[in-house]
Structure formats: C-alpha cells, structure tokens
Image 1: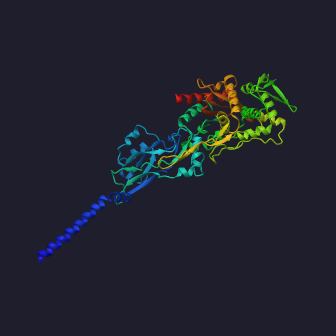
Image 2: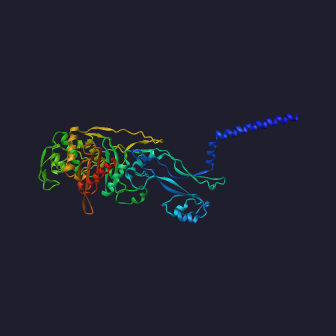
Length: 529
C-alpha cells in the first residue's frame, strides 16, 4: 500500500517535472528573445540626443544631410573615479549625479585619454549639416518658425523617424549597471527627399562662386531633363552657425537664385526670338548704329557711344548693341515681346515646387506703354525684373530647340527602404520653331566667338550665351549699382548644361559673370574626363 503511494507520488513528481521542462524549453526557445527584450527594456533608460529627420539626397543618392558624424560623450558622475579630470578634458561641469550627454567641440590629444575612463563612453552621432555651407540655400534649415528651403517645403516627408538616443541598462535600484556601457540606437530609416542636384557639380559651382562672386547667384540645369543640377547663392551661410547671420545686413540667408533682379541685355534674347519667329527680321537683317537714337523726342544712347556703324542683327546681339534693339523693339511691339516673355516663363514662378519662396518677377503689360518705355524694355531696362532660374528656363528652351521643359529641383520622395519613385521630365510645349531656335543658337555662339562673351569660352567644348549689364537705379556707397549677367550653355554644338551667373554690382557681365561661367564649365568638363 505504501509502495503504491510512493510510486504514484513519483509519477506525479515526474509528470510535473516534465511539464516544467517543457515549459522552460518553450520559454527559452520560442519566447526567449521576446522575454529578454522585455527584461532589457524594463531596465533600460533611453536619452534622446537629437531629433531624427529624413535624409536629403542628391540625384545619385549621395547623402547631403546626415552624411557625417560628430563625437559625443556620455558621463555618469557616480561611476567616475576622477570627475575633476573629466571636467577639465571635456570643458563640462558635473553638479549632480545625473547622466550627462554632450558633443565634444574638438577632439584634442588630451581628450584621447577619455577612452577607457570609468564612467565615460564615447560614440558618434550623425550631424544634420556638415558645416561646409555647400547647398545651404537649397536645403535651408528647420526652426520653430518653419525655416526655409527644402527643409520647410518637405517638412512632413522629413519629419518621421526614430530619434538618435543612447540606451543605458539599470539595476533594480535604478542606477546604471557598471561595466555594461551604453547602446546607441540602430540605423534609422532611409526615408527622405531626393533632389535633382548633382553633388559633384554643386561642388564645382560653389568653388567658382567662392573665387569669383561676393554677392550673386549661379544655376546649372541639365538641358535634356530640365533638372537643376546645381544652385548656389552668395554670400553663403553655414547652418550650424545660423545665429550669427540673423542680425546681419548682408542677406546671407537669401537665396538669390530665386530672387527678382534687373536683367539688362540678357532680355534681348526675348526680342530676338520674337523678331525671328514673327518673321520681322532675320539674323542677317542690317541696321545702322550711330551711338544714339531719338525715340519720340528723347535721346537713347548705345553701349558704344561712338556707334557700331552698320551691322546685322546677329552682330548686334554679339556686340549687345542697344540701338539695334531699340529698333527691333519698336518694330515687333510690346504685345509680341510680352507674349514671348511670358511663354518663356518670365513673370511667374517656374520651379515645379510650390511655396519654395521663388519670386514671380515682372513683365510690364503692353497696354498703355509709350514708345520711350518700350525702348527701355527692349534692352532689359525699366520696369522689368527676372530671376536667375527664369533666365535658365529661357536658355533651356533655346538649347532644347524651342521646346520648354519644367524646371525641377526635386526628383522624388524616398521611402523607408531607400527607394525613390522618380518623376519624369515634364514638357510644357513648343514656344517657337526649331528654325528660330537654330538661328538663335548660332547667334549665341557668335556672342562668345566674336562678341561681348569672349571670357565665357570653354576650350574643346565651346560655349554659347549672352552677357548682360543691368542698371538698377540704386546706389551703394555713392555708386550706381549695375548687375553683371552671363547666361548660356555648353558644349556649344550639343548642349548638355545651361548655366546662368549673376554678379550683384558686377558692372559688366562680360568681365564679371562670364569668367565664372567659364570656370564652372571647365570644372564640369573635368568631371566627365
């Protein structure tokens, strides 16, 4: 009887043990990872280092933001053996036992001794901006007030993600467990915005601007697609040093590539297109320039006061003869000029991005315009303003054989897996005939070969374009300001890129803007080689 009970007890104990083993095995094999994570989470404290933000990429998926790191330190005062020495090395004060996480402003030889110190852990955190200032006006910045640029326009697409944080394991007493260190968050989503910008071409443009432009802008557009591959503005700024620009009167935060300016002789291209397309003149039509022209009782002078003598329309464009274009303007009329100016994109925003801050510029209406006002408009003076991107739009249409394409700065939105659904180029329609485009292209080659744009010449490739010197009516330090322009494309025979350079108060576009254009072209040519 007793033996029977013992056997039953053993059986019950064996069964219970078997169930326990099965349960433990189940928890270990099937639930172990989940339970381990939960246990760690319960004893882990995460401290946010910086708010996460999506990446801004160039057209080849190179990171423009979040592409560099900065060294941070995490210090637990209660674990430190020599908090005074750590304070000296880091420049930080530690008044409490709370964990302190901070960037190291400079990694010196002395700071190298922080490695291995008890209570100190060093780690890298991605930096939003690299501090070089490259593409800063396009990217913009974020702030509580919204900021500007791509950061503001695509704030919603860039906002999501996991914050950069440091996780520390604590014991039951909620104190950091010595020796277990810290864990940084895993790699975040690759979500972001893909620009049309080519980072390497942007570097070429930035270098040329640094060397040749104090105040102004440059835009480079890929002809076949209408995609902006570079855009720069001067003076520049660096996002990490934003505070020092807020009280400046130099306008470092202004993107001059999308601001409206007096245009000067670059606008003569609109009259040229109008005259050729309407059949009023041909490139070989002849004019006489005596240095001035009377328009309704008022004398209008040429850029050459001695006069150019007899010359063709093509030669008039190459020499930027004002008298030729006074006559062209009177012949074609303001209605035709207004029509082609607007068809080419002037007087309204041309970028595909809405709410980017781009100015409309202004083309005066034909109605009620006097012959004298028309004379001024004919050489790009008077009540008329354009943006560098609008000028780039016009040159793209000429280079594309008279077909206008939508200028784009954003290629697509990038998903969590780093995939972008790129948008296709958008045709806006034919503005003028292939014949007119071919004739204007030949005339622009003459501007560089034998005219005012000789400093824009690019060896081996060749180039074509138009100079502009725009009187503003404004004075700076007692001197009348005149902006310098060069707008053109390269290579000359098979255009790949349009480039527009504006130099504020550059006086002569041929002397100030054309050499910058040439340097940009040479730099892009070198990239291909």
